[in-house]
Amino acid sequence: MAIYKFRITFEDFDDVVREIDIKSNQTFEDLHKAIHRSTGYNAEKPSSFYVSTDNWLKGDEIAYLPNERKKDRVVLMENSKLSGFIEDPHQKFYYIYNFDRPYDFHVELVKIILDADPNIEYPFLAKSVGEAPKIMEQNSPQAVDPRGAAATAGEFDFLNEMNFVPEDTDELEAMGDMGINEEEREEDEESEDDEFGDEFSDDDQFEDDSHKDDY
Image (cartoon, rainbow, N blue to C red; front, side):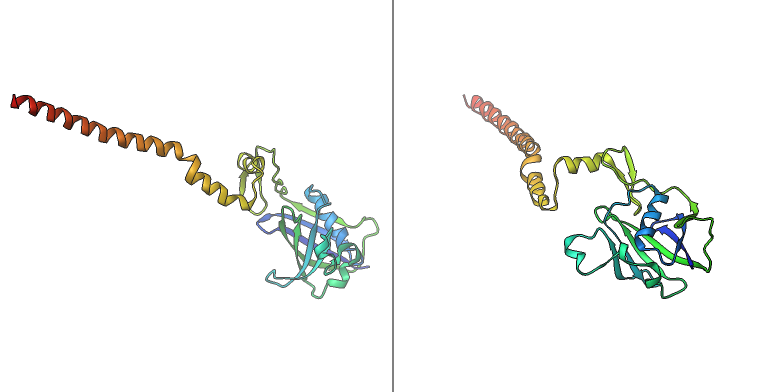
């Protein structure tokens, strides 16, 4: 029984590395779950492997918990043995974890071991370097998005508490034009009126003085 050694890295965190040894007749679901035993993430999330080119261009999709729209046009991880998709000794797979909040990985076959070790239970975590980035959570003070962006919970919470959806953008812009800054506009208009008022009051005083001189 051949053993595949896969090297797994985050697309934006090259210093976080996992190497997993897995039997060639095991499935992509087995690999998916092994990856997240090593990261500490919840494996029960819609995710997909894609057969990839050397440049990480995505091809055929192998899915876990696909939505209804995708079910009829993808193969499932639990039904897909790894050996059926290995066409190159350095075969690559582009892997997306959790489509609700997608994080991207590069998965590369780095070695084929001809004989399984009878003392090892596969899949086996052969190497672990670096701590997996924390998943962005609503209530955490600060979280790191594995795609490389630092997000503050305050900003995230504001949009969620407002039940923000992209369609609300026009409404927010309208509020900015008509409502939020209305008070400032009124203050500006009042200050302009005061300036003109002062000028006119000075002129009135001037006219009164000139009439007095006539008498």
